[in-house]
Length: 192
Image (cartoon, rainbow, N blue to C red):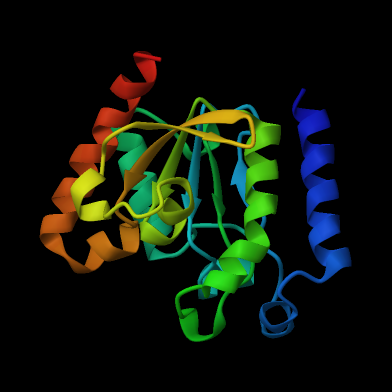
C-alpha cells in the first residue's frame, strides 16, 4: 500500500512542479518540500510553510521547531517515523514571512490530496495558518487541543488544532500548554 501511496504523492509533487504553483515562491526557494513520514500514519501534522532549514534539506520540521516536535512525539510514546508531517505551503516564503492567503489557497488542493492519499485518523494543525482552512473563524487560543470533526469534499477528518512549536519555543507558558495538549492526542485517537 505504501508503494501506491508514494507513487500518488510523487505524481502530486510532479503536478505542482509542472503547473508551476506559486512561481514567485518557487523562484526564490531551494526546493519543494512536500512532506515526510509514514504514508500509512494515523496522524498527519500540518505546519504553515517550510523555513530555512526545511528549504535546504527538503524535509519539513527539521530546525528548532522540528527538534521540539520530535521531543513531544517521544513524550507521547511516538516516533517521527510513526507520523506524517507536511505544510500547507510547500515552498519557503522569503525571510520566513507568513504565507499569504493566495499562497495558502493555491496549495490547499494539494494538501487535501495528500490527506486523501494518506487517510489519517487525525489531522493535527500546528499554528493558526494551518488551522484556518479547516476551522475558519476559530481562534487558536480558544480551541487548542480540542478535537473537531470536519467534512471537506466528502472526506471527514478529526482536526486537533495545536499551537505551532515555534511559538512555544519563544513563549514558556505556551510551551507547557502545547506539551499538555500534545500528550492528550494518543488518548483522543484511542477513543476513535
